[in-house]
Image 1 (cartoon, one colour):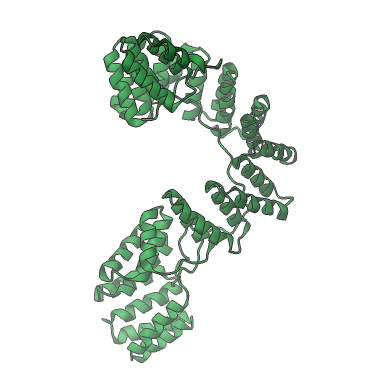
Image 2 (cartoon, helix red, strand yellow):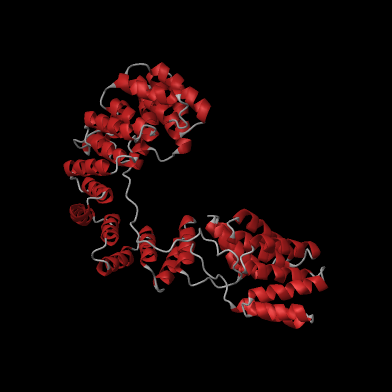
Length: 530
């Protein structure tokens, strides 16, 4: 959130004028007038004289703090505000000024507590609610932020940075309608290029493709020779579903700029367009240009594994680890490439090494369990998964693979319990229902098998394994017509694999926003006073 004056300047003048009519001391009155005229050194001198005359006057201490803050003397200002509070614990203005000062100095926790103290003194204090809401918004506590901003009854600033942050908060709270209203409000304001990029990204997240398209195309027209504008248009084209358009624009960018961002975007667009050979070439070039970031190698290995090029994926993962030796994700990817390529001994070593280094996630244990299952060591897989569940707690994949391992050892009742544990984490898993149906079928329980397999197909109508098993269950139940119908729609396609996805989605390069004046993390300038 960029720095801005959160409250119209008239509030400051109204506050000072009000005190001017309620205080008769000459030094104090002159100090107020000088403060209102922004003559801060002279105001400080008058308030200092007033304090000498009335050292126990909390209001004088408070306004002396304001003058000090305006002169950038933050420590001295804070001391004056605290002394004002000590002298008069019910002086709301002193709490508010201290809170604002702490916030401006980058101490949001202390500022929040101070504003809360002000609200305990005066629960309806508009400015304290407002500043508290701004802090909470900046800290990502969006629900509380919007409650306090609403309680302040003050208008929001017509500032794109503030409003973009508010819209982000609404999106996080799944209040897309409110987010869209704020986005449209932003779109009516004068925007710099960086704000326009942020707004376009926001519109894409809200599925407002035409509005996003208008922004990014306008930026590209206004900056025809700037890398960032052309790249952002290509990125936006990909996000609104135009993989072909994005690929053509990204290819043009690679010819002009040869940057990893362009090559990565080209690789992603080609992959989603079915141009897998070209995608691999693009990802390789991105990795050459930016070898010290694991994401480039993860993109490349993901695409190689998707094309069953496991030997090449192993080689790419090893090369990536040469440049990024501490990469946990690349070690997992190497193990997965070994596993899928049938090199079980190498995969087992990778996964055991990760577990031996106290892998904080269950992924290595799940990989090892798959090696053990494929090499006929189901009971060892059960033990490995059980130990991991005790160490890290349960999860869907741990319960799922425990169920598979238990089924392989013939412990069908324990396997059913494990699969039902998995359903607690993901009730929509077609694969779990398929396994439950298979176990019921093995146990000669045709009715139970039919129920589970029908649920699997409801969740995943293309699950050919579930359809074949359902046909067998109907045959067991002496219903040949239903058995034939169950297999009628099966197509010659590859059967689904495990539910684990060792290679997550591609890493889309970030927006290439133009340089802007740096901001300070959403707090006002030090020493400022509304």
